[in-house]
Structures are given as C-alpha cells and as structure tokens.
Length: 379
Image 1 (tube, rainbow, N blue to C red):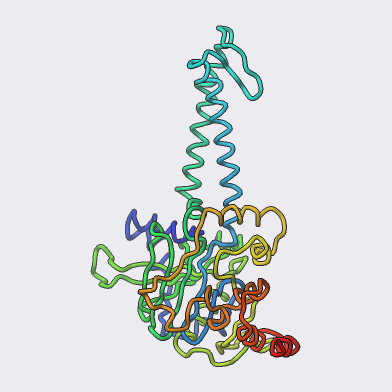
Image 2 (cartoon, rainbow, N blue to C red; image 1 turned 90 degrees about the vertical axis):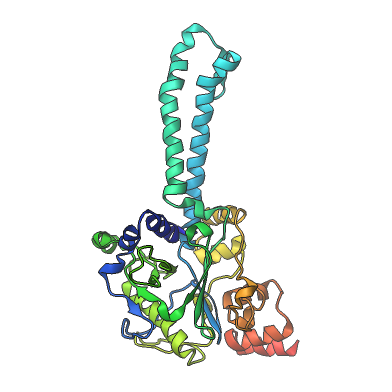
C-alpha cells in the first residue's frame, strides 16, 4: 500500500507549497548524507529490510501493516454500498420499469397505496445511496485505499553503494519509478505538518523515515526534481529516535559499508557498526507472500491474513528494470536470496525446498546452527 506517497503526490499536485507544508519540509532540520550525530547509534526496526549485501541495501515503504485492515474496511463499505443500491433499485426503479416493488425478500405488484415506498426510494434511500457512493469515493480516492488494490503489492527502495544511487519502485500515480542521486537526498524525521505534532506525540502515531530530494534548481518555480521517498520505520508508535537511528543505519551503510559480520547480543544503544548478515527479525519477504507468510509477518492469526490474501490476488510484485543495472552484479533477492542477503526470503525458499545444496550450506553458515550446517554438509 502507498498511503503516504499518495497523500504527498495529491498535495504536491495542488501546489508546491502544499506539498512542502504536508511534511513541514521548510520548518525542520534536514539531515544531509555527510552529517552524522542525528542518533546515538544505528537502529533497524523489524520487518522492513528485503535484502542487504556488499552492493545494495533494499528496504520497504510503509503501509504493509495496515493494508489488510484498509482492505477489510473497503470491502465492508463496498458491500454496504451495493446493498443500498439494491434497496434503491427495488423501491424506486423496478416499480417504474416492471410494475413490481420489492424489498429484501418481499415482492408484490405495485399498487397506488405503495406510493409512500416509491417516494421513500426516491428520497431517503437515494440520499443514503449518494452518501455511500461519496464515502466510497473518499475512501478510495481521497484517503488512498485505491493503492491497496490492482497495483504493486509493496514499494521497494534500493540503496546501491556501487552506483551511489537510490532506486525506487512505486505506482505511477504515487510518483512512479525513479532513480535518485544519493548525495542529493536529505532525511526528515517528522514527516507531518507542524500543526499536527501535538496530536502525533499524544496519540503515539507511528511515522516513517522521509528522504527529501530538493529541486534541481532552488529558484525554479516549478520545483523540477522535487520528490520524497518514504521508508518503513516498522515502529508501532511515534518513536523519533528509531527513525533517526534508521537513517543513521542507511547513511553508514552507504558511506562505509558493512563492518561486522553480525550484530552482537545485547548491543548498546550507541552501537554504530553495520552487519554483513541481517538477523531474520529485521527482514521481510521479497515477493508475493503466502497466507502463512502474512500471518508470520503480521503476527496475527485471525481474519486479517485472509483480507491480505484477497488484496494480493489483485496485485503484482514489482521488479527492477533490467536496464537500470541496479543489482551491481549481485542479482535480485527473489532469484538469489542467499547471495543477496534476503534472509526471510531464503528461509521461505528453504522451507519450500527451493534452495540448492550449496545455497543450503551458505544459508546455515550465515543464519543457521552448527548442527544444521553439519547436516547440510553431509547431504
């Protein structure tokens, strides 16, 4: 889902000032790629990294955690709208065309004493129908529920150390696929209007990390090149320290690269090294996940994974254009999960028996146990 991207693009199309006001771009500090000190240490929230290797770090956009909830509400609203349309047709249209009136399971030939029902169909019920249609329009177009259906399942943001570029996949009406120069990006930790800060803090509303790409020319009235990338912070509440720590992680990865194999147990909050192999808890599945994978990542087992499966059936998984050469020779996480450090994807492939014997050994070296490694070597 692309709720934040959709909201920004709608504001940006109204005017440049409204787009900037939405994120308070001019009212807060913007951290450049060469500036350190925004956080005590690095921080990677769980379930937002697709893959990490020596060439690129790939992260998800926000929206996955609420997509199933939005889908469930959208379906309820659509069903309510269809029901009211059926009522309106039975009380207002059908009597005029076929001379019969019906309501739910009751149907009779239209007679003059049924005129109040006909009038009610053309007044009260029609008013409800118009209200439902307006509500559907506001939910899908105004609030961005449309981004949950018939488009890319999730966004992909790839930070490439070799090319020093950032590759972004998203729907066309949410900004489209773009390639950004890493050195021009600026981090924003409070991507909401200044007037909303008290509400955000009071209700602990989770916020993503926003990377602002300024216009190519400051005096350009059209602000050509201005854009914003939203990255999932995977926090369940407003946690600016985590957002700052996520930016520091990305910044250090791009500037210095991995410096340690794994994150040590009980690492202090001031820990600032970048691991070569991310733990599974930090990773998310790269591809169209199954219902079981949805339950694992959403940490729920009730109805929400069912709605997520329904949403997925209308979506597709976006892949980076070959012409971009964005993988720098490492390959794609969907095709080479072990080699690219897509640990969650590798775990799923291993459970499905899709890993080769060599990949199985490599997987156990990085993320498995000594017993599992010996078993893989013995095959």
